[in-house]
Image 1 (cartoon, rainbow, N blue to C red):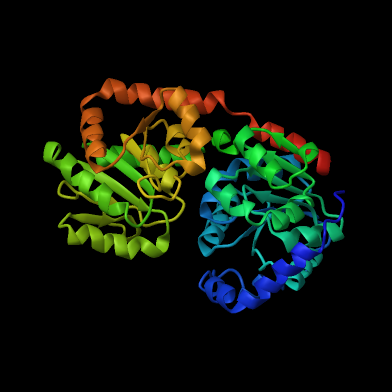
Image 2: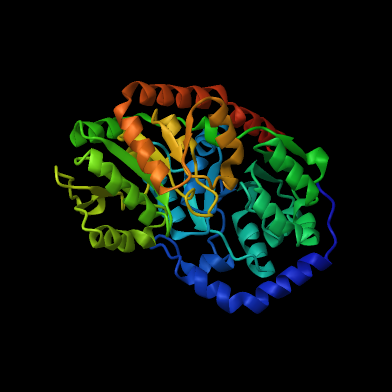
Length: 434
């Protein structure tokens, strides 16, 4: 068990949280799910039922829940006599977990997954949550490091781990200003599974003990689309017909405008080309729909059951949990968050669906994945609207190159799988399986 760190960083951190609590509570109040009570934010959850010990996995939002899917399946198989409690910060993450629960129910599997909202990291809320949940193991996905929750786990003897640990250079520069606080949190972790050497070095520089960190690779490479997703993609592709189709996934404000402009230029060459546009955040669905209509483009909305006909220019993917399906139905996939300074999103999702991957230049969050795809000849990078439009035209003319890119992407994903097995082996040291 890691030794207790200095108390003063945690005291200062907790005092700051209390001072900011009105603003914090105002923000999380909007993140509401009908399946969960808001009081969960204060650690007020039902006590753990007898007879089924739990493993706790925390994922911030919908993207992390999706990326953690291989780990979720592996934990359920590896620990058959334990329940998996998944916490999220956001309502969209909660919806994704509930969709997973429903899929398991429809498949006739025992109900072993439960969602809770992560409590705010106030000392009392953290202690209540851990005391009532009584997890045998606490797992935090990527960069979710909460000082009071880690302290509550340590006090109750709960082993803790960060998996798929990532820390971008930009995030590192911000955290470095709070190094005493980060060192206090990281000192309490039993194990950190970093996704790259660069991430590991940045965590070490913030105070993570070298003896408790391993580089295991990215769990995102272990993504394997299930049969239902693959079949749904095939059906959608068939229904869309032979027209040129490209998808822009996980887009952000300031990016949709650029993508629509590139699409307008593409339609000068291919008048029947279709863009499947999928905003990152559901609260933007209406605004993006209005943006499309303001540009005079014919729009169909998936959430309303509307279907794109020959006149439709944009098909809005305004549903949750279908991004992989939509990627798989397209000829080309552009991954958003990369034409604006967001840092990019998961480039491996379209690659795993066998679709050529395009991206903008902003890739700070996925620099290592981008480099791996780049070395494998499986990434097309564009600098802006004009280059994106020209590249789309060129690739739609060149079916052989699209096929090569798709095969290269699949090969990169297959060659880099293995982080899941290493992650499970590390967790096994903290909590042996039955």
